[in-house]
Image (cartoon, rainbow, N blue to C red; front, side):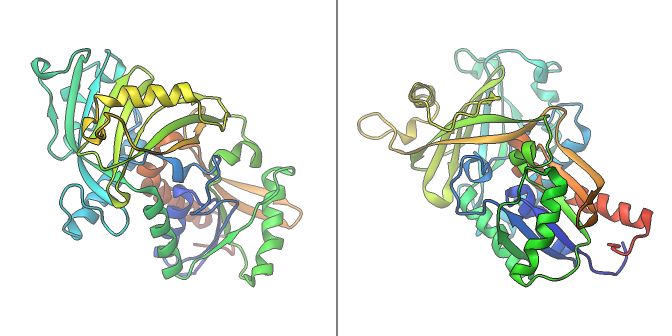
Length: 372
């Protein structure tokens, strides 16, 4: 990397875009974030606030690079907990908290092909144990437990915004047009920034637009994975999950806000923004025996809200690649960074570092005026 300072414009303020902005700022570059939605917004197409947000890998045994990103976030979050000397269930200033995680599988699947003791992440987990078959609950074929991380999304996203502000980054809340594809959006961004007195030449763009990449790029491989969850009062004592093939029942405590997320659904291609009452009932019933400590004197959960969000799925997995795009305002370098599905939080550190590396390599290779 050269000593020159670049100006990076990040499109999107989900957890991936915000963490990418922080990473570039920490490496000495100027950053402007342009986003239709920012922390505090409640749109269903703005995925990050609605996420369950825990450390539970989505990477398969063959996803070697994504495994590295997973472990990078696991270690970073545990460092945060340990640096702030927090006990299990106590949140850090960023909304991260350590909890013990208990997972069961209701049926055999590919992940268990070599036995739960040989799960790819087993050697990396703190306090990892296989639950003996004699101790499994009725209906479970396997189980493991280990120390993990839960994230209060509202606190964490605002923490990232505060970090960007602290490092002199800028966030502009604005909607870029999609009718002209990514070229039209980039040209619009160049006209927009001077309105906010941001006149520094743009060195490169990072496209962290999440589910909006479907129309912005456009990328037909991007699709929604609808998630419906229920937020209830009280903090569960553990992270818990029961995996049923492609479905999962989960309990994710949020220590910073005295609440717990119950879930949930993974409905590929479903754009329905409205909560489904039947699904809500199913979630509450399926979690009743999983988190009994949260039931009130009537034997019911105190429901705070029912939430719907769209995970930014992408056929083929996350897209991270550099592209040069000709626009009416000139040619621009873009690093696409989207399609993280339901793993945005745990992949955010590794994804950001990869994006930094890709742009660094590109400019070093092409020796342009916008070197990083």
